[in-house]
Image (cartoon, rainbow over all chains, first blue to last red):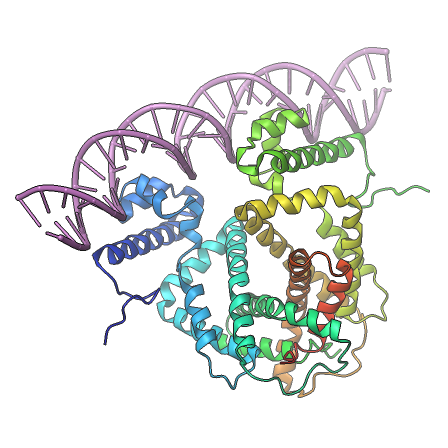
Length: 226
Length: 226
DNA sequence: ATGCAAAGATGCACGCCGTGCAAAATTAAT
DNA sequence: ATTAATTTTGCACGGCGTGCATCTTTGCAT
């Protein structure tokens, strides 16, 4: 039962393990320090010291000081792409995405304390929030490719096409467009869910909000009741 | 024929006008220099010199050197919000957004050359692209508030509600959620359109792609034909 | 026009960020 | 144990970004 080199897991030689440990230590130290003193007051030197490495090493792991606050889990994206590929073939692309994301989000809730701190840090300095948003968007391109691959390999033969099915030309363009749009919209769903859930924390479980958002999207964003 | 103080236009006293001119000069200089030499090789000093101001003044206008490459039109967001508010009451929120964005995008195509350079600069250094994406997302919160205001003030009484109209609780939550989700999805539409259009440049006019994306969204992202 | 107050522009100093380079330390393999 | 490959570290250096004091420009009233 060997997991030889699964991208995000704890396999591999001593080198790989130490590198992951160092990276995680730096990220965690960064978030904790920022939560306590405010991100702007936390220097790269402080983070490095807290993680027990030199400043130079810090910059071997992160291109920017801010990245240490933002990129808390470097291979979450890769895990999600794998989940999309592994999803049952019976699911539509949208459903496969929804479930993969829900799984990833559920997993994040288990390290609840650290993620909570992370959210607080981002919220406290909009500057970092912007970086975080942008970073997530950058992943969407790769996600779109995975979706396209899934569709090509016959994910589900698409029972009915769009209502006003247009010309062949239109359909072909839609095929190029579709994976990209789907990835982008799914990312939007996560983001909006998080925002809405943070805004009115008490009400419902996060995953319920998330599913509701997906339902609204699948319904074509119907106009709200007056 | 006086346009007295339209937020993004050339009104106001000499101070306001000069400030806008300086800001524009800095942004344009930044983009042109970056397009020529690569963004990484362009120092804040070079940008300032090209715009004829001191380095210190540069940092009075931009918090970061990178911002000069990214924030090319500081009040585009404000213009769009105004357009949403001014849209005919007969339009649904989604339609009002679509038209407002289409108008803004059409306007951007008139300064075609500078925007082209801008796009090239962002594409050349992913780092800046990420910042740009994040910056646009940050605007969406304010856009969501405008949408909410429009809906409250009876934008259009919403002919039919969602297919599987649920409980009152669900509908109330959806009302909070809706403006946020709409703003986010509309932003996604713009972004995806731009990406898709850049990827296969020859095919169609940009605005056609944009409308197609909106149509897909309004149809609930139907699964593509096999 | 002239003087005055408010706002912006500038120079300067200072500390942190981020990188190239070479030497030292650690791990892997024979 | 020796050797090769990889990683960590120290050092130096230039660019970034800010607080502060000063000077210039603009807006306004007389």
